[in-house]
Image (cartoon, rainbow, N blue to C red):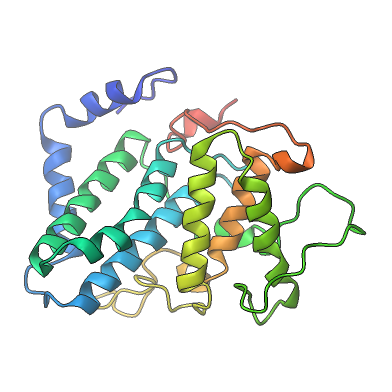
Length: 264
């Protein structure tokens, strides 16, 4: 599709579905994610939920340009935020079949969203280049909050335990609810998957075929559970540490998957 800098998302969506070719391809790709031959068990549902959260986070924070100021796409943040309600709602759905149908229905929506945002490409190395110990714009001599002993932390970085309390205390005052919800999901993900070592995230390697054992994305094997605190730091830096006096930032609506969106 051509790049239309001022197009509404509805206009991009209409262009994407014309002719039916892209929707058909999205259905094909979504079917590959969860073949019908898979066992319909609770561990499988849990694994698929985890895959969605990793994917949404990588799309959200890993589709910028190296050497450029990060941009956070307004529609990709909705992909991120919608994953948070899934673990709770799955507990309320009585049958495995219904749970599976709901999860299956999410991926085509994600893929179509990616399509209309210009198919931005995930850059795992870019994700890991962001700091794992984000700090508000205060003097280095200012003491950080003392965390609870059970706070989420990275054993490789003793200072990391103080990061989340600082972020959470600031983001609750963000004037835009999407900012609060994004950090809420990232904090949840850090609690669930924050100790994941490099190479262990779902989908890091091809599991079958000629490329078995190879990375699915270049650099993805280097991504670990620190992804979520890194992403939260980007959110705070871009959307503003308002509690510390920074002005609120803005979401990007340029459809950053197109190279032309980065020319200015």
